[in-house]
Length: 245
Image (cartoon, rainbow, N blue to C red; front, side):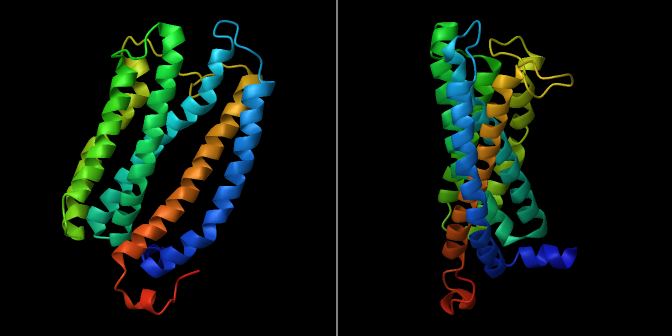
């Protein structure tokens, strides 16, 4: 197991594997995105209260879910890099941050678009919205902190601490609608009992979430390879073209 762990931490090996896996993530993501979008925007019936406005969930829910998932992955990678001094783990964390920030922006934007006709306002300092905005600030703070150091190792250590501390906000975002009185609707899918959403609306949403996850994995492969190239630009394996594919 440890041999596999250390092999995966090798920049040449990770660079090659990421390049090989990328198309296996990207093309299924596109296929699921097309089917899920068609199912959600065309086949799913209107909601009896929200009418067609509910269809924004097919973008909002996946992007909100990915904003939390990506931050968790970033924090775990940062912790691995900090504890085991694994440079590749820091590279994974650095590659995650911009992608997670964009998912958070998309979640906030689509939530505001939905909130205008439903709540009568573009923004409300609701616990879910506020904690999601804090999540965006954590992403931006992580990237700004990394950029403030010229030395890569110091940037890795400082930003890793911020990522690990900031992960406490993830369960706050997740359970804010349960812990506090919130305008945001309660969970509809991740419940102990059956999901409170009709199956004709649920299956396109699940496909869209899967599509977003696979798309994130494909983009992460690209960004990780770019981050490895930046960090290993003077390495012998790179100059000899041993891992480029």
